[in-house]
Length: 318
Image (cartoon, rainbow, N blue to C red; front, side, top):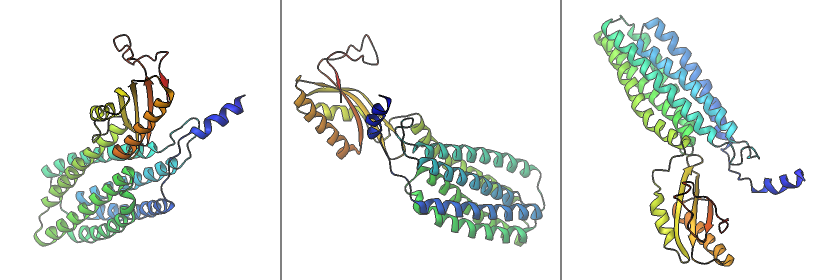
């Protein structure tokens, strides 16, 4: 009996495609490269006494951790859907992105704190060491960005990691400029100013993406989809009285889930099937919603008695 039930359930599990193996390999190479950059900048920062270089090293170390999280998340997301996770594991990438962005913002706040303290307590900095190590860091960041560029267009998780690398590249460029100014003019305060600029930039850029990942995890309605507009459009279909109790949310950054109650005019099974096909086709073609659950009703459910719209004997789930 149990086996027969499983045979009926398994075919209905929704399977979602996974990322390519090349992205996995690129992530591994990026992690190794970032660890090498981090080691070089830590040593260079200690020798040169540069807070900006140490800040960049700390940022790179966090990048290595974020890339490792991205690698783990992508590996988990490739797992096939099962009876426990019927939609698969794609949201693991969103969780990975959330962790990356939160840690990045915390590090940015730490850098701002350190920069302010250094501003009131200036330090002598060895410019040539700072300059050379920053060039090495910039080259490493550039190569890593190239490795992650393609994948960043397909995944918010990789996009967050890609943002880490880009911000590192910008900070390395800034450290190079600061190193030159310190060598040429002994402007040690530039190191502190640069630290504050780098941290502020990272904080602002991360906030927007953190909001996006949080909305997905909270199952918020995608910003570009209007439930009322969709309900009004479907309600204009032949045979449909109205659509209500509409819910739209993201499974991940590119897959949308939809459910709604549909009040129809006729209690005819053939009409229900045709209306269902028309609605699903409209949701797919017009709104790119490929997974929808519709509950058909022949009379309005009593909203005043149950806010969740209790199912009546006349309703049929399709």
